[in-house]
Image 1 (cartoon, one colour):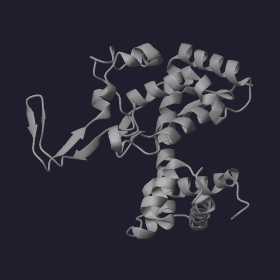
Image 2 (cartoon, rainbow, N blue to C red; image 1 turned 45 degrees about the horizontal axis):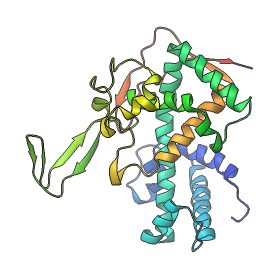
Image 3 (cartoon, one colour; image 1 turned 90 degrees about the horizontal axis):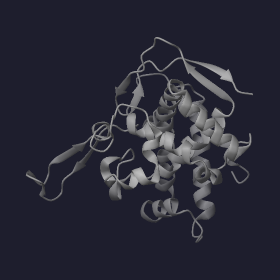
Image 4 (cartoon, one colour; image 1 turned 30 degrees about the horizontal axis):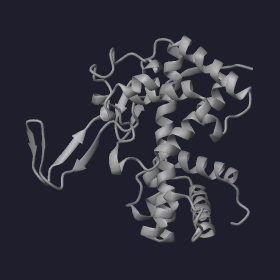
Length: 283
């Protein structure tokens, strides 16, 4: 598809997301999985084929060129073009899952903290002057990014991760034999009062440069860390900031009083029953 543009991906991706219930594994790999327990709309097949062909054509068009993006280049080198396309597509959809977890919590928390919401609107007005944000604007939106970091601290999309221990290790007085599985929880660490005073309070000011430097590296790891950190971290951060910056200029979202926003610790930290909000136009 030589004439396809990134804007042409919007409808197919939306079709897949809705049809597969925002499940990136099923959306990209269901041809290799047992039959699904629910019925997926028939239009999901052509939509998935369109996205797969787009990613494949992007790789083939850039294969062998020095300016090829590092992530895609690494996949092609180790997996070959065909598997690289499937893997890149899976990463892309997995990052949408992160966003559809982070942003509902963001809107809910902003509605509870009007002063924070006011500072967000002031920054967006100063930086964007009413236009849609672009990737290049993200660095000039520090408070927007501070809000998103704090949301990911309180409600990380991934709330627990595991690692296989290849060699015996000692941590303080604890000996971990080779072959063990070690679990670490973002939910627990992000609410440790040693690093985050009043840990249950929503406070974006925790993310000034000075505050960040005064905390140890792995006191905060919403995307995991080390050599096996999430490959789509930069993608998710950019997507969250651009979507929040775009919608917040047009709408205020007010939580309906009396409802309880409860997290559900499944494969991601989603909202139980979602959150009902009243949208008010800002223009």
